[in-house]
Amino acid sequence: MNTVIVVLAQYVPFLVPLAAGVVWLTLDRTDKISLAIRAIIAFALALVLIKVAGMVHTDPRPFVVDPSLKPLFPHPADNGFPSDHTTMVVTVSLLVLAYRRWTAIVLLVVSALVGWARVASHVHHTEDIIAGAVIGIVAALVGYWAERAIARRRAARAVAAS
Image 1 (cartoon, rainbow, N blue to C red):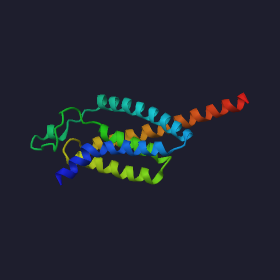
Image 2: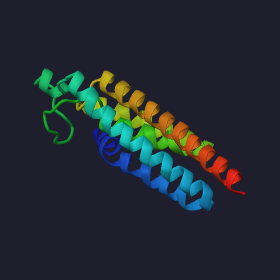
Image 3: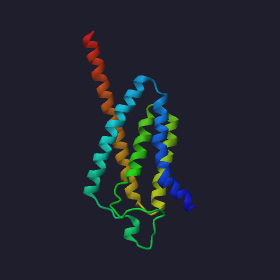
Image 4: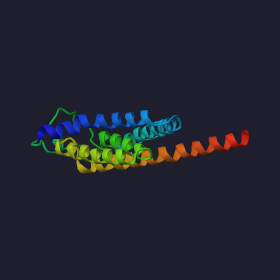
């Protein structure tokens, strides 16, 4: 069981952006551009929010708080708040939602499994995972709204120019 937990916690997070990249490759040019804009905005915001959250709140990792817990893989004893991995997989999953609903649902389930595995492997507390998910949701929503605003402005300029 520990091997499954380690794979989910360490390696599966790389599959989520890979799946999103495959989705991106299947989109038409307009959707590729919109997804790219959403992703750039969402990831920039996610990085800022992760840094701010980590400065505002410190949560030592479970194996630091309780030395009897051993992480299932080597991990630095740094601040575990919020979970970067969870933030990334949730953000990516939600960015895909506007383009491939069922793929995004599968990716969100995978995101939940990644979060669970990070807790089960003793490198995060549940609140680290929840905070990462909330940051991912906020970042993806802001990326979506910002891209929509940019698209509306470009459309208005195109109409005005014709």
